[in-house]
Amino acid sequence: MTPRGELDEDNTTEIAIDVIAHTDLTTSDIGRLRRLFDAEYNQEFGEWDPELPYGYAPHDFHIVARQHGEVVGHVGWARRSIHVGEHEIVVGGVGGVLVSDRARGQRLGGRLMIRAAESMSAAGSIAFGYLGCREDVVSFYTACGWSRISAAENSISRAGKPVFDAPGQPLLILPIEAPLSSWPVGEVDLCGRAW
Image (cartoon, rainbow, N blue to C red; front, side):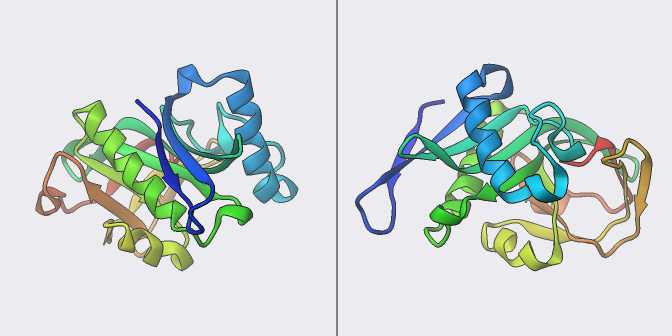
């Protein structure tokens, strides 16, 4: 996909936002992404690994924001069929949402989420975006148009073991090719690791 440049709030420095397939990441891209993630998480989780980021599922696509050649923001997503009750649904599982300290306060996170949704739509055959998050960031995602659902969730932990989470943890969906009202009631099985 073509890059989309937007000026930051002081209208002096363009922030380019690109959608890059995981298989098209260059060594340079990986190094810049690693610097972004390690600045935030290295002390707690160690070095970022693009194939198993901090034990979560890898991404098929990376929405990458660059300013002055450095990566200042990222959203990743991966296509997967999951089970909700008796239904199979194709989702774009979202993770790796991060904006660097120096780029915060410019609404970059919202712009990245919009591009992520656009890229899911362009990829085709994705019913919903899907993500889990911390309670303190739910309002960010709802401001981006995502809707909170209440469901139990089965997944594989970052350590590779089965996990069951009771209803109540923050789970959010975004209609891509299906209406919000078509999300079925039932327990969610991610059929793998969360993103």
